[in-house]
Image (cartoon, rainbow, N blue to C red; front, side):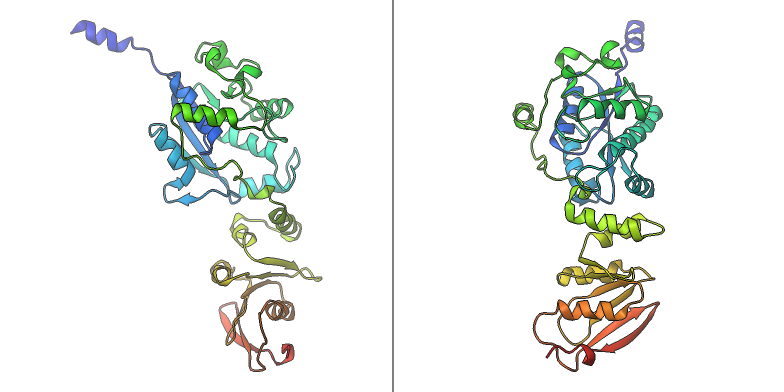
Length: 334
């Protein structure tokens, strides 16, 4: 009996590590490699208004699937909101091909994950980053900037490319066996896909997904929004994701629904200070006006209405809790 008590007291305590888990193939593989080394993995998943993931009640669908496949490891979900938007507005390290501040984004996420690390007394952080996979944020210089400016230099392990990078503290201290880490580089996913098959990892999302800020069309809307908005807020971002956006010469903005679903969404997303205009007795798009130029909003409804508009056509105009009717006689197109 005494021997059993002594044995349980001297049992080696598992090393804890916090992994940034997107639910994609690379981060899932990185977590799997850590679990195989006996590391107690705690996942942290970040969402922002610019994520293109498929949401579920329990979180991002891909992350929920990944966590389940990894043995239901603990998962902490962190929503990045106005702090993230401010970083997008003025990134220290600039943008990628669109409005994507990849290096600054990574630094912020590492810092947030580091707060979780301290809270649970974990030994190090790890990510699914692959050297040379992304042109802006995954070359050696960028990784060095991220490590240094996040405040966790030496404590960020990248299991998929570790053999091509300098040893980290968990490797030097024997917490992680460096010989079992990989040396993947470049943009090809062939090695990761083969490794996933070998380890029974499936149902991971296509790597083409990710961040709306890399999309050129959305980036244009985002740039315009940040230029004209005095107080940017994540509450405005859903409106940027739908419709055709037009900036009037006086600074007013008109958002035009492209289909019936977007017309409904505009009604739901319209802010109290916005004007909502919708066809009353004909089939056409709803529009949101941010400003005062009612004629500009009416013109867009007429422009995007298919087929002739009757002389009796009218538009419902809602603003400030009130409603009135605008007749289209002056805009009749014959």
